[in-house]
Image 1 (cartoon, one colour):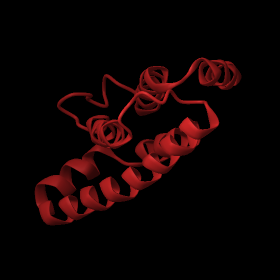
Image 2: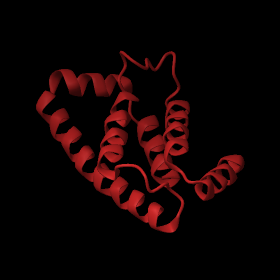
Image 3: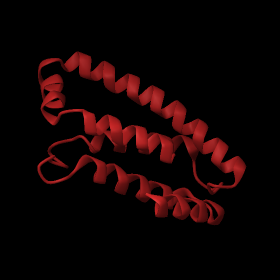
Length: 123
């Protein structure tokens, strides 16, 4: 998940909020296609990660993988939503970092928490 988050941070940081606004406003159908592709691809990657993490004991086994994966994917779109997180007020890297910590602390097992804290202390 941290690797996925790093990729997300790089991608979000590279996208101009103005470009997102323009695509949403002037190329609505293209934006919808992009959203759908992102949702489908990200969902598949996240589900695979969750299942592996549960098997390896890093994630708890008492959450609904389908629901939490969909919540994760939907929430990533909020991070680039200017009306909620205006870029003038919220730095994209910090948003993604806080989001991933919020997300992971909700699903990690005690074993996963130790590993997560080890990784976070290096960053």
